[in-house]
Amino acid sequence: MTTLVLVEHNGSEISKGTLSTIAAAQKLGGDVELAVLGNGVSGIAEAASKISGVSKVHHGDHEELAHPMAEAYTKVLQAIAGQFDAVLAPASTFGKNILPRLAALLDVQQVSDIVAVEGPKTFKRPIYAGNAIATVETSDDKLVITVRPTAFDPVARDGGSASVETLSVDISSGATSKFVNLEESEGDRPDLNAASIVVSGGRGVGSKEDFKIIEALADKLSAAVGASRAAVDAGYVSNDYQVGQTGKIVAPDLYIAVGISGAIQHLAGMKESKVIVAINTDEEAPIFNVADYGLVADLFQALPELTEKL
Image (tube, rainbow, N blue to C red; front, side):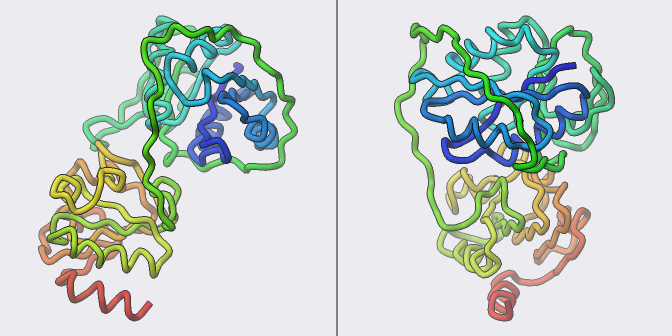
C-alpha cells in the first residue's frame, strides 16, 4: 500500500497534526509519501523530506496554491491520486475543508476522524460526541481519510532522507471561490492544539473581565487558554479558544477545567488529556467523572491562591 499525506503548514512550519497523521499512515503499511502545496514553500518541502519514515515528497508550488483553498488543492490531489491507495490529512479545519471535496471528485466515501487503524480498510472513529467508538470498514478501492491528531503520537521531525519531486500540474484559474483575507489572533501563549498544558474557563467564570483570572494562571504555567462553548457564547472570549465537539480537540499533558460543568460536548474535546484537573463549586458536576483530580471550591478563591503559589 502506498499512502499520500497532505501536509498542513503555515508557510514556515509543518503542523504537529501532520506528524500524527503520518504516524497513522505508517500503520497502514507500505510507503508513506507527502504532498507539500503552497507558494514559495521550498523550505517546507525540504523540512518534510527529513521527517522520519517518509519515502518521497511531492512539492507543488504555484501562486494559486498560496492559500489552502479546497478548489485549487483538490485539483492537484486529484491529478496525482491515481498513484496512491490512500490519501490522508489531519482532521483539522485544513483537512476537513479539502478532503471531503477530494472524496467527492474521486467518487469514494471519506472515512472521517479516525482514532485507530485496525486493518488496511478497517478503522475506529468516535460517534455521539465521543460517547461511543465505531469500528468501520470501507469497501472503496481508494481511501480518503482524516485523522484525529490527538489519537496518534507524532513521528520525529528528523531522521528521514526522502527525495523531493516537483509537481507539474495544471492549476489554471476558473475557481468559483477566491481568497479575500486572513484574520488570525496572535499572542504570546502556546497554540491551543499543540500546548502541553491548557487552562480552560467555563460559564462559572462569570464575565469577560473575570476571565482574566484564567489567563493569569495560564501565563504562570506557560499554558494555552481554552474555554467551553458556554463561555464563548457568553462573550467571555472569542471562538478561537473553544474546546469541544464544535471547537478544538485537545489532548495536553495537563488540562485544568475551571468553572466548567462538563457537558458531553465539551468532554468530547478534552477527555483524552493525560491528566485532568477540575475546579467547580458543584460537587455533582459531570466534569468530576472524568477528572483525575477534583477540587470543590470557589474558583475566585482557589485560582488566585494557586497562581500565587506557583
